[in-house]
Image 1 (cartoon, rainbow, N blue to C red):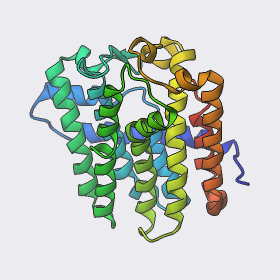
Image 2 (image 1 turned 60 degrees about the vertical axis):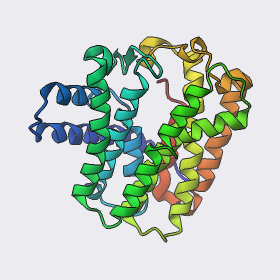
Image 3 (image 1 turned 135 degrees about the horizontal axis):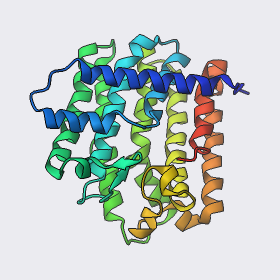
Length: 296
């Protein structure tokens, strides 16, 4: 059994503060030609995000012996991709949300055209950041990040999610949507962290992959649950939005108890996957538990 000590919450807070500083520095050192666009990008990135994807990069990399300085570019890149996805997801043509992380969404704070451009620019900045750092396995890392963000990952999942509104889906079909829309980027975060430290042939990456696949789905199931039981102030976004849009969710299909049971089963799968990594994976175990216990 992996010892989940109380040290990991402190590490979580430290990593969140560290990645926030990295993101602040990224924008501070660049003189952008379009000030309004740069302001929208900064607005989308610098704020009250949980930074879980970046924290996963650090935790996975450290578990395989990686150094924090080497992990920074991948952590920044994953947060930029995540921010871009939120900017575009919130647009009127997508989920049409007015609130994100407790503040007006980018298209509300600025305008729709600027929000579209900000999302586009954040996506390309992610790959620029990774390429400039030139880690040893850069090609593999770019491939993983691109696949996770594109038609075979997050964008494909968002499309499936949009097309599923008002439709009757079974649990398997909903799991497929979640694995693409949310799980793909979480998996990429874990694998990018691992690849910063070791070669693609290292068998421990398979353990990380199994872990990431399980927590990616568990994370989204818990999001579905929070949309039902949470409140707008705590969530930082509109509660009850899924039901209002007639979107298929795990609570709608399995009930609240059934959805929570499924998330816990996935947690068990994730913890089992970490066994080959021993105590080095304790922070990853703590993060997995946090995924299904968080309040927002």
